[in-house]
Length: 27
Image (cartoon, rainbow, N blue to C red; front, top):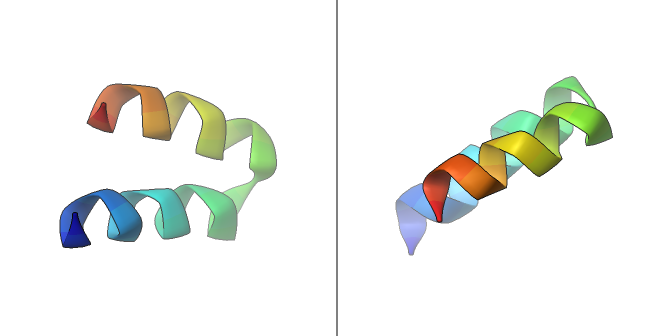
């Protein structure tokens, strides 16, 4: 769960567009 949050944060930090694909990869 921690890693998932970290990835999501990383994506959001860069861009909302980037956050979407990042979350999908984690899932």
